[in-house]
Structures are given as C-alpha cells and as structure tokens.
Image (cartoon, rainbow, N blue to C red):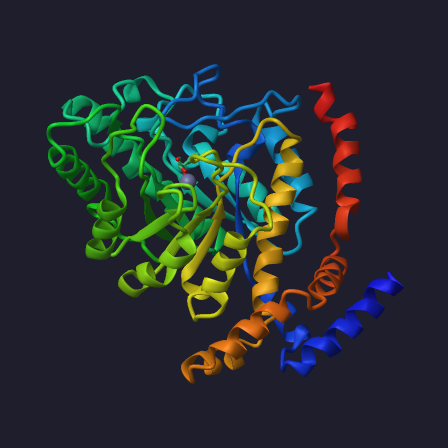
Length: 417
Ligand code: RNT
Ligand code: ZN
C-alpha cells in the first residue's frame, strides 16, 4: 500500500512536468460508466427459453464450467465481477434475461418481468441498459426478423422491439439514469440476393413502427447496431453500416458501433467523430474481433487505446455510451468480465493522461516531429502507477490480485453448479 502511494506520487510529478494533473484525471475517470454485457455470464442462453440453440450468426465457443443457470446466479456472478472493476457502472440486459415464472413470449414482455433486475440495480446504484433479443427464437428461423416479407414474422418482431424500448424507458425512469436500448437484427442472406432494396425498405418501415408514439426519450436512448456480415449471412446484411447511420441520423436515433462489425482493416476509433458529427449520441460495443466477429475478451491493445483517445481527445465522451460486447466460454466468465472491463477503464485512464492541448497545438502548427516524439515518449510514462493507485483508492484489487478472488469464487461457487 505504501509503495503504491510512493509510486503514485512520483508518477504525479512526472505527469506534472507535462502539465497533466493526475488527481483531476482520476476524479474525471470516476464519472465514466461502462455497461457490462450480461450475456458473458451464461453464453447468451438467457432464462426465457431454456435449451434454445443460439442463432443469428453469432457463436460462443468453449465449455468452461460454472455458467450461471438463473437470474440469482447471474446476479451473484455480476456482484463478484463488479467488485473487481473500479467505479460505478451499468449492466446491459438482453430480453431473454427476463426474470419471471410466467410463460411470456418476446412479444408479451413487460417491464414487470424485469422488476427483480431493477430492484437489484437500485440497491447497488447501477444503471441498466436493454436489448431486444432478435435471434435464438423460432420466429427468427428464416434468417429474417423485422425485415421479413412474412407479415406475421415482421409483426412479431415489431411488437417485441416496441415493448423493448418501453422496458428501456422503465429502467431509465426507475433508476434515474438514462438507459440505452440497442437494436441489432441478424437479418441477411447467405448467398447473393437479387433484391438488395426491399429487405432494407421493410426494415425501415418496421423500425418506424417500433418508434411510433415514442414519448419518453429522456429516460431511454434507442440505438441501432450495424453489421457487415454474420455466419450464415455472408453475402448480404440488411442492417448495414449505411443503413443504420442513415436511419439514425434521419430519425434522431443513435448508432451502435461494434468493433467487430466492419471489414478487418476498418476501425471504429476512426468512425466515432464522424458518426457523432451527424448524430447526438453514440453507443459503443467494445469487442475484439480475431479474424472475424469473434467477440474475444477485450485486451489492452492499440485499437482499445485509440477508441479511448477518440473520446477523451474530443468533447465526445459525454455523448458516448460505452458498452462491452464479448463472450468467451473457454475461460472463467467472471475473469472475462474483469479483464475486459478493467482494460476499458485502464485505456480511458491512459488516454486521459496525455497533454492533449500541447499535442493538438503541435499538430496545428505542423510540428509533426514533435507530435511523433511526444506521443512515443508518453508510452513509457508511469501510467501503471496511476492505475494501481486508482484501483487501491476505489477499493478494488490492485494488479493481478483480483485473480485470487476469482479462483476462490470458482472453487466455492462455480464448480458446485
Ligand atoms: C451481434 C451483435 C450483438 C450481440 C449481442 C448479444 O453480432 O454484436 O450486439 O453480440 O446483442
Ligand atoms: Zn454488438
């Protein structure tokens, strides 16, 4: 503990020479919320339709023991995960995580089916976000949901989505923190379509119906997530990048940028400022695609830092909602949450510990030599000491000591499931 403080004090001095106030940075960092994805805890199984296979072109691989089997277990696991992540954050729920004994289908869900989650979040001061589940359901068997040409199928998903944003509004109102409801549709064709227009028209019309009569945008923000392709929908995706950006910009919705939903050399860090130039708010699904949209656990890599820099070097952090979207069943699921979320916070800290004003000035004046020299030297500044100090003062484990707590929980709880 003493060493952590000593190291922090030296680090503070180092950053001071650059004009960076580490104490002020940590105060600001405390305010940033990360939305943890509930689905990492049980491989996107949910509780509504037990045994239903995962569909929609996404895949969870691995069979690590201990996945949560019900809401109570998932909440216990989340409590454990949150205790390892500095700060007060949010939880993102999918519709299939409704906690109810009733037999309710997706087009029958109501806020009351999520009352236990709201109660739990209230007790902990957490926020909640929401997602309609437009996959893993017989009505999604054709590969099309809201853009289906079958009226019955489309109506079903419109109703599910309409109810979803009402559940999001309920979360926001109850918890006094705006919820984000994110709409992602797997709709697409495996092989080359003849008509690339009609499904998009149907998706647009479906969304218009979902958002008709929307009244309470103060408590809920609606976001639409694009994707370039999915497994089984390799040739055509209805909800493409242009579709979602166009729809959001024109209709006052937000775009959701998922790090794994673009061509392999495209990065969302570069899209953030552009998208926010034409929309008011933004949702991120921070993920790590390895060769495809594989949803690996987020690591502390260059793109994660670049995402953080896109937010902190601009005034865009306040208009961005940071959500995580990875699911790995080959490792301890709580460790996956802890690693990914700690890395997200760490990247934000690292991005905030730079003399952005000085760098921007160099850039404007054409001093590219200075810009490169300083950004490179910054990489070996004692940022780890600031991170350790932050963890310590926020009451969460410092460095890898969190792993011991997870291992113990694994023995005591997970392996007994
Ligand atoms: C799928 C999307 C979507 C899902 C979650 C479970 O490619 O990224 O966000 O991962 O809704
Ligand atoms: Zn996503």
